[in-house]
Length: 230
Image (cartoon, rainbow, N blue to C red; front, side, top):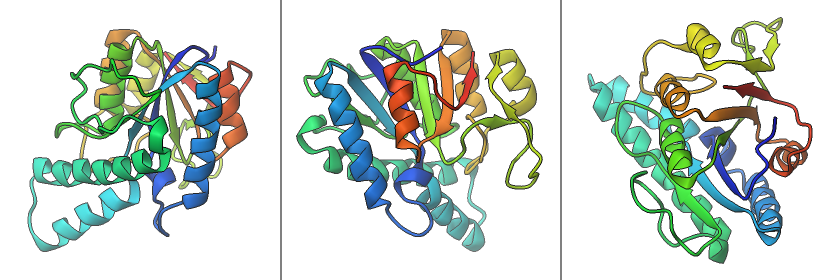
């Protein structure tokens, strides 16, 4: 199974854009170069940006000072995704449409080969917005890039013996990782997005976005390292 096709939707984890140590300019430059090469081959992209460390830092700061509601924390996260998206859109220059998509219901009929998106409403992560955009864009597969190479049976940061799960159905994934959304949730894929993906019949590839060669393989339809859900 691959994500090979002319229309590709990527959910780009904020941890790749701006990890705790600061904006990863090397990654963003290389990522832009990779997508530019695929654009020359006739592919079009929607890239939805997550909030990552910026999001969690601001949410944690708010929670230390006041008893913030879930929606208040989510709105902080949404603004963090917009900040990251504006940065990525700027990095892509003329390749990208001038407008960052903040509402997945808007038309994606735009001339630019790359469209950048951000979060939309409280109650879910940008993964959910990426699923809605994939459905509208006509993409049957969403590529989810973060700083983990696979979906694991347990959190690999806590359990070194955690085993990678290379292929799961949505039913299996939701049984393991279902539950409810909460602001700043660190999950292989947002549970709200998982429900939407299952309903829409969209497959999700989970892979380490820091491995640019592997990203190239996924986009090109070649064998790759990662997990497939759906």
